[in-house]
Amino acid sequence: MRVIALLLVYVASIYAGQFDKVKITPEMSYIYVYHKGKAVKVHRIQDTKNKLTGEYASTYRPNQDIQPIKMHKDIQTIGEVELLYFMKNKVNKKKGLLVDLRPKRAYKKESIPSAVNIPSKTKNNKAKVEKILKVLGAKRLEDGSLDTKRVMDVAFYCNGLWCNKSSEFIKTFLELGYPADKMLYYRGGFQMWKILGFTTVTNQ
Image 1: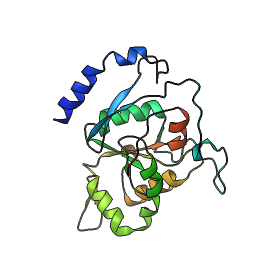
Image 2: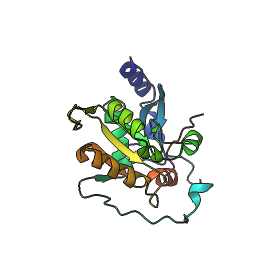
Image 3: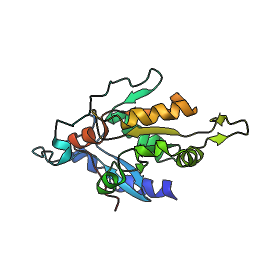
Image 4: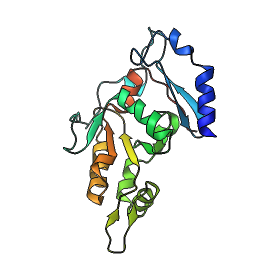
């Protein structure tokens, strides 16, 4: 049913992208993703004079260092275009999950469409982490090891280039045995998403 609905939305707006002034790539003007059961058009703000305001317009963050492009030798770091393909080809098909690691208050105010919220501090709660692993398809065996043969692909993001929430959470998952090739690190995070004028949603 979801596939049919998404197809209808696509057909209805097939010509809309031709008139977009601000594109994502020369070939891509927008995509549709599901967020809490509703199709959301993800594109860039068309007002070429639009300027960023609010928290994510700031260039300084106290006690935060810029994160390296490669947070771990086995983890793939991705940009916006790769994230969009992940949302379209993995999240929409329930083969992947986009995780917002920011605090719940920030997520409720605004997030990337299709993202689910797992506050980074959750990594310190063993019971909650086990539940998350189970949702992602991992299975805890009797000997204590983790069976990850059927786990989902996961893309993590947090506040931005200066935020370590994603890298720390990914390190925790690696220590627990989650496969590195099943995790993606969107280093730009919410600040870069905002800077590029992409669609956001509220989660009240």
